[in-house]
Length: 318
Image (cartoon, rainbow, N blue to C red; front, side, top):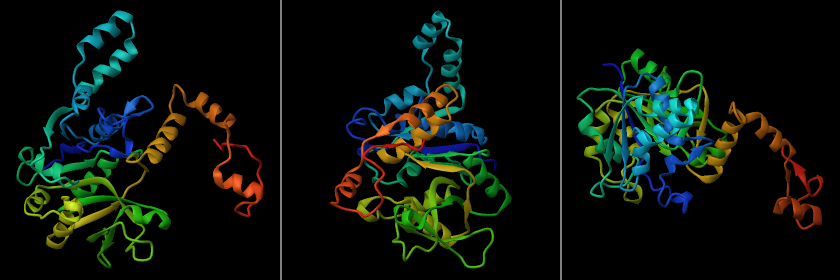
């Protein structure tokens, strides 16, 4: 069966961004002029996806409204003669068929729960893309398309996107343990946030997957794990034990937007490449004079550190 559906998990509370996310879903936070979730939807559409299933929660109406038609805004833009903005707005609601499913409180919290919410929309044996709402991948070939191509070429029960990370960062991610001497790479299990010494590889799991309804059946019978949450990692481990799950290192730049620091890093990189503001923003950053950090002040005053004195104010590299 062709892969034509995508399930996108956007039911989190975004507690790391409070109070900004008190009434606004974190997936609606803008990357310059486009919300995070729209980047995911566009990736899915460019990968051949026709039906987008957004698993939301109570209070996420702004997210649902974003992909709906906005007649009043369109009339206003038409009256202003702003045809460029009008076309952008119209395109949003026509990119795909959108279905919204609420994640109720009767289900356990966790990153496996959205798939239970979407189970009635997935036919027996039907493959689909699953996307975490935090991750953006910039690549010539869309990340989801890369996984779909692997799924179409191989007989398997799932494909998981991964990318190499610096060993010092490995403890922040789920890390696959691979079966020995298997190509394409075949998953044995995923180790959640291992320390650097015990990490089974330097590959970090990205929030992109291709599954069939087999993963949903496993989740239906899976007990809640750590912190009482329903973890996709646990279900994937069982799926790999029963069948064949492939690990695919994707080509492209992976941005995770789940915390304020990495969100801001993503915004800066997208702004630098933005056709309308990139040049001016780059000029601004090059001329920015930064106050010294606490560590730099300590080194200058002899209170800490032994590095060379670069002066109390330093220019940003970009």
